[in-house]
Length: 231
Image (cartoon, rainbow, N blue to C red; front, side, top):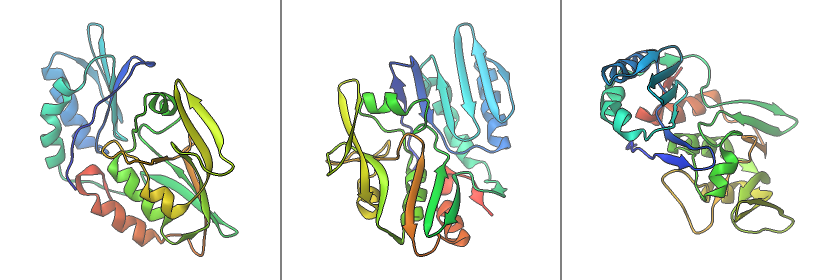
């Protein structure tokens, strides 16, 4: 999978956002050093906080940077070096937690931007913060599903609940899992008709069986430089 940078400015939050690969400790250290060389005062943990005058940058290890300043100049030059760092094998799942109950598979997704703090602003400006790796994992979760999933679309359906953000109108309704996946909008793709994960970042579907841990691990590993390799 090719990696490309997609910076998003959300006017209502007065912040620039930049989705990044999920970062291991070595990558975070490399990024911190780059910011220090650029004159920032940096504190490092699983979250980097950097400041220079009235400019501040935050980078989460989960794969998102945000700032009150434009991010491409300070961060874009270090991206090739970040992607050359050897991937780290980790236990656990950096993308979601899930459980199967009475034939219903419920997954709480750990998304970079399509979450509570920025979800409404993205809808208001007709944008998506869903990254390709996140879309790939969602698609794998819905493989083999039957029936419908609660989703949000930019086109009406029967018995939709209308959602309005600024001048933009969306529709929350039950939607066929295959249709939801086919229309899933990402930072890199906008279709004629688009679907979005609900604001609570939960997908729940009826399945004959839950996706196997091995299958999920294969999907995550295939995402290459967008993510950690998963055990």
